[in-house]
Length: 125
Image 1 (spheres, rainbow, N blue to C red):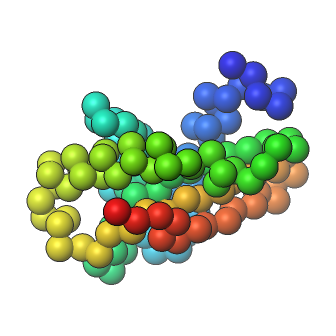
Image 2: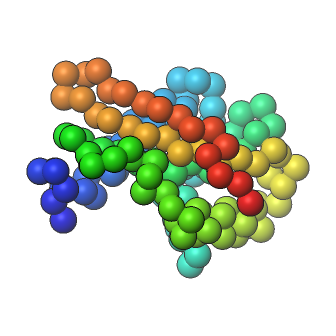
């Protein structure tokens, strides 16, 4: 599917790779990427100093009709929370971490001036 003249799937995958690098540069460890469950998908699962963040990456190119984070509506949030619950069930050693849900907005720029906006604790349980 084309969105704003770009293929949506490659754009999203590129944005997720950029997001993983963005978190790593800030000292986070990327534990999982594109973690799929029956409940939904987690774009990134990252950890740093006792904090476990489930990250929804929203990438936009061109001139979007709104902020990327606006695509993370209540239904999407519930799917992320359900997938995160499953992740924690499968990784019980992580249950003691402080949990948060981030939304990372990514705007790739062909000139190398990529922009990011991290909304920490964008939503909760």
